[in-house]
Image 1 (cartoon, helix red, strand yellow):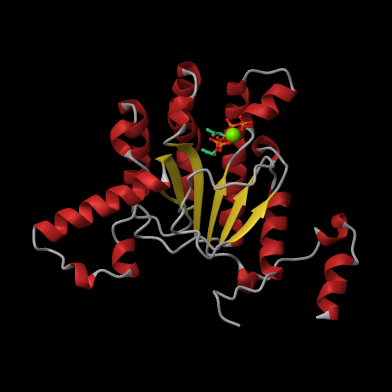
Image 2 (tube, rainbow, N blue to C red; image 1 turned 90 degrees about the vertical axis):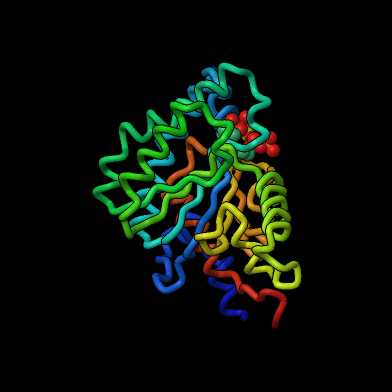
Length: 255
Ligand code: IPE
Ligand code: IPE
Ligand code: MG
């Protein structure tokens, strides 16, 4: 214990960042709330959309780093069900980003065996946004490497409400008995049904909240926050988060 504290605090942060990661304890699923694009831009006297554009480059870098480290699932919160409240021009810009990102990066994602997925409410997305994402999903469906899961028009409360609604329907139609419903059965109705829960949640930009992100799935995830704005979030920060994750003891309520 003393030894552990000593190694944790005795080193300067720059030294600590040199420590190598334990390859046997890489989080299987990392979820990221990519926040701070607007403030990053504002600090530079740029329009907010410049921050979103720059943040897209971070998506690329962190995806490649996750792949390199052997992370199996990377879920990125790209647009929440609450983000529709933003000015129309900003929403329209954000809805064009998946197309732009994929037109530049899809070939490399395919080369790297990355499988693209989307977790969110498809019905409200503009057709051009949905078409770009669905095309990437289709082209990478057979890939077996990193799963790159975009949370796009995602909201945890809406996800759970829809799960409950569908469960009600299945009960009414006699496909499900309420007595058979348990946690793992409930999870089958969530948008994350084909993924394990996140082991590690990262949020950038200094905000300490979940903003309606994966409320069910994050029940036992390790949380890591940084003041760094998303456009400036680097591979080194990502490694730092994983290093901190590796220092933690996950107990799940046990001892
Ligand atoms: C995160 O950056 C991107 C989205 C929510 C789409 P923000 O746009 O929230 O940036 P801030 O929080 O205003 O700085
Ligand atoms: C959360 O960030 C949503 C995404 C990163 C996509 P927000 O910037 O929308 O969250 P709040 O409004 O600060 O809670
Ligand atoms: Mg924000």
